[in-house]
Image (cartoon, rainbow, N blue to C red; front, side):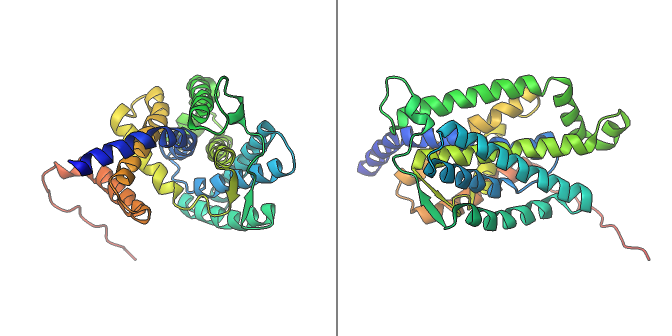
Length: 307
């Protein structure tokens, strides 16, 4: 009983912190969802775009730039990174996963060049979280309000955009690029713009995280992709993915639920280094769950290679 009571009390105390963190990181989950679900373009650029946005934001804040300017610059940098990934795939016919790996690998050196060192402190610099009315800056409540408002605006704008002609074109390219091209849609422009948009959201999340935690680090994106995938799986299991509205809601819902599950693990005494293992196992279970209830049928026939 003492263990359960201690766990519950610890979990309740962690809710504000993890809720603020989940709202900030929900943009990474959104940046993962758009390539995977909307464009059918498995992409790993988010793991490089997230620290890229953080490094750009950190350098600008340290130089005296305003928080909105720093976020806007991070968004542009992330958009450029995503566009480069799409161009590598389209121009050189390199697989999407390999193109993303190449980009995130190169971005590590780019981030080091941007900051000039592996980490940078911006503690005490003004942030967007200082603008929450009637709340003390730096506390979880202010971060929840600001990040929640930004998430709401992004959700509404994207829900409107993906129902417009250009948004429908991006969805059509993801559904069937050959048919989309036959209908006169520019597949290159839709793919490059869509992947750029996704990476821009990941970079924005990195910029918000730097303003929240007060420092930037080139390794801040390590493992963020698997966390985002776990959150996306949870969100899709809860709200589904059959419509545009559900697809857009899944990243935000999944991020909130996932990080509350993380706080449960921490409250129960799980060592932080074991969280990566727990996350990986959880993603595996979520991916394997649809097949667990099916009866085992014959293995599919393998194609033979002919000379």
